[in-house]
Length: 297
Image 1 (tube, helix red, strand yellow):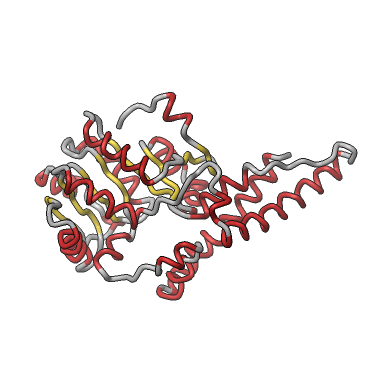
Image 2: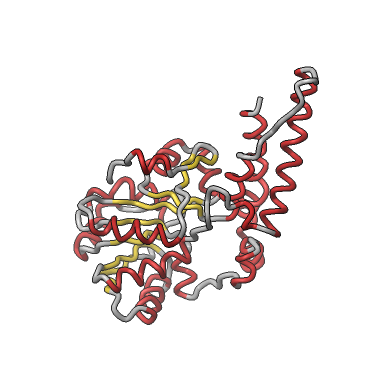
């Protein structure tokens, strides 16, 4: 993993104590080209509201996110949180300290409701610091296109059933010049044997590894094992993206993604995700609001 420069630090924002690199897709791909050319190993995380909520209770995971080479805003909620946290809260000094506190809390709650509506109906307005959402499910294709053009190899690690094989065939169909040097899936993430997986990757000697174990397992696995896989220049956790690529799950239509309602499509398709959706859609905004009240005094 490379050392961060002062320039990189200046290009970070923090949401609930976790860094986010406010990059456009174009700038992100430039970074990937650089990562593949230098002599260091790198890992990228696609940080969404669930990541941030997990990081609040898992210090190891939070540290891993903050030490990553890039932490991308994967979710409109992350962009909203940065926008909301930076809205000024001004209360007249004519009020007593007790009243100022009450009015400040009231104003912050009103800001939360208003900014969430803005994020839903006019999301461009919230992109003050973070220019766009960079979803892992979308970036996979851009990365694969880049790898195919530059003769870099890819390894797919994780996924259940036929998903890894189906994803491999689909990526090779879309990118005929893409070299996928190996795949390994079908194992339980709770019973991971690091040595076995590392050995499989090392036999294939890929330049890039997509790790599909779901958070926080995939990020912790990458952090534990990246330096044991010397050929790997870039590792990125891709969560359930292989399911979309392999066809075992349908992704929300583009129009739903554009109005920040992809979560609703996934809930309808997978009702068992209710608790996860609740965390991202209800618990996360509430936690961000409480955090702003706390730091605003």
